[in-house]
Length: 313
Ligand SMILES: Cc1cc2nc3c(=O)[nH]c(=O)nc-3n(C[C@H](O)[C@H](O)[C@H](O)COP(=O)(O)OP(=O)(O)OC[C@H]3O[C@@H](n4cnc5c(N)ncnc54)[C@H](O)[C@@H]3O)c2cc1C
Image (tube, rainbow, N blue to C red):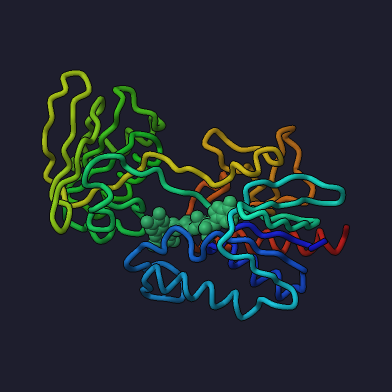
């Protein structure tokens, strides 16, 4: 039996793998892919210690760092997806889509999330060409420009507030007439002269070649369409955490993110108590903010705690 199973190959999973090796914890790290969500980004400008790095290079650097440590203590199972996590005598067993099984006393869930994509024509083609899923990553690139935000929840309004610091104008589109975001956040955003909201509208097309030049929206009552001349479209219509395989073991919030104790990254169970031997870190958790540095930092925090727990138990 291993000391630890780490599930995930993004910044959280890789940070955990490196720390596990350095702490001589016998670990199986299972990752479908390496690098994480920002691998697709042209340039990441907030990975601390690096002024700018293409997402693909960050993925290589993460993998390289882990490879330098794999061997005696850390086994890497690459290209396989954990489909089941179950409790066994003295620990947990993870089973992958290819039938591999690994057992350990402790588990770190670091399988991240997938952004819910905008399902309209033009959205896939113009992704990273004006259409983006990360305001804190790409917002500053739209300084002085007219941009749109899709999504009227807290994430949408918080994105709008961030963008108002750079953009000339921000137009937020929300499907329903009632806004889902907290009233105080909505008020703050609407206090800006550059902010307007289309509630009861939905996007039907993103236009532009080679970069975004307009967002077409439809009034859901009248079906009338209109074209908003914008150069940026920020999509905040939710995330899909990769946690389905762990739902029998840990408690998840309404969108499927693992509930954790923020001091230690220990996971909560359905009964509201901490689950012995299970931690979670990064975008798969109900941590308020999701960024590469936070994911790596949370995983490091978890490893400090896991190490003490393994030595004590
Ligand atoms: C387009 C885009 C650009 C971004 N740009 C930036 C940026 O510039 N700066 C920044 O700080 N943040 C950025 N972010 C946010 C950042 O990417 C995330 O906060 C970060 O990747 C979270 O890391 P993570 O390790 O928790 O999860 P993820 O990055 O989601 O990684 C999850 C890992 O787990 C693996 N996995 C998933 N399910 C399973 C399973 N069942 N079994 C095994 N493996 C599994 C995946 O293959 C992946 O390797 C961006 C996000 C997006 C979508």
